[in-house]
Amino acid sequence: MPDAIDFWFSTGSTYTYLTVSRLEQVEAATGMRFNWRPFSVRAIMRVQNNSPFANKPVKMGYMWRDIERRAGLYGLPVKVPAPYPLQEFDRANRVALLGLEEGWGKPYIVASYRRWFVDGQEPGMEPNLSASLREVGQDPARVVGQAQSDRIGGVYGAATDEARRLGVFGSPTFAVKGELFWGDDRLDDAICWLKHGRLVA
Amino acid sequence: MPDAIDFWFSTGSTYTYLTVSRLEQVEAATGMRFNWRPFSVRAIMRVQNNSPFANKPVKMGYMWRDIERRAGLYGLPVKVPAPYPLQEFDRANRVALLGLEEGWGKPYIVASYRRWFVDGQEPGMEPNLSASLREVGQDPARVVGQAQSDRIGGVYGAATDEARRLGVFGSPTFAVKGELFWGDDRLDDAICWLKHGRLVA
Image 1: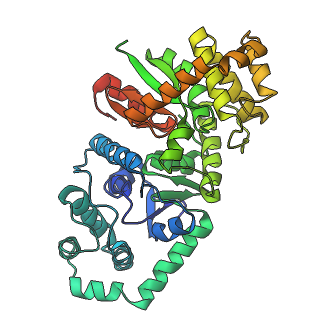
Image 2: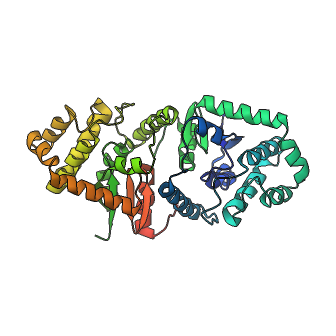
Image 3: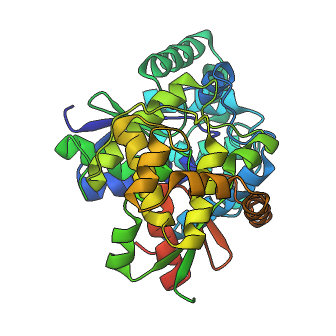
């Protein structure tokens, strides 16, 4: 897939709301394809002593306002602050992984983020979990059971290891031609790099 | 000054290289004016437990590569990694403050950043300090003496207090109409906000 960009992300990252909610439109507008790669940014951040907002209330306040403004730019509804950090971070990402394997992952992830940022319901927990799964035609009991299997745990851990080896330390990160672009605000840079091999105005 | 944006920065911030080196061009192209406001981002970061790169080698490596790519975008020369963190951070900013009072501050700051990011010489120390001052027609002995005065120390402390009260926690930060925009990559957002009161594509 020469025209694909690896989109590394964790449900639980706040800025990732801006990415997942517009990525289909971006694909349609640019012809780019994105490989959605859930991983545990939390596991990597813990090891790297890189907690972006914990015990940093001023920076956290800025982050919510920044997201609010940029959601406006993209025409996305948003009500901030949303609950943070997520209590069921790993479950949210395991469900996302299973969904991407089975073909319903993208709309599920977008739906779960919408419930988080518009309705204030955390992904990976009720009522968000069942409502978002039913919205994409899935049985919550089956999905939650499979998502907590050792097999999905192994896939999740392997994806996180792969992200770490690549040098990914935050979400979202776009990987293209050996380059990493971190942050929703680097999406255009990643697309530009794929097209031109450098950044152009 | 209705069309002015407050540009809060510390010499010592890496990404600020991208801002100071192109701000005159941006002013010419957009008609915006920027009030250059040096402060101690280090003092604020220390209190807020917000050290962006210390003990974070993976994130630091990304930062240098990100700056290198974006310098290419702006047509700026760059050799990374540059020395970091600065040993004479406060002196660099006190000299900048004095220079802005006396009218030679902007070209001095740009020159000191160029020596840092192109020649690998730290601002606030020799040989960068004297060479950058002579480049803008100033006597190094006089300037360094004045910069370490209690008066400039007071101005520096007051600017840092003002930044803290505004909610500034990083450099560069653009303040416009009660909004803060953090990061060189938010310069366009700040300009847009001044023009339209919101972000528009």
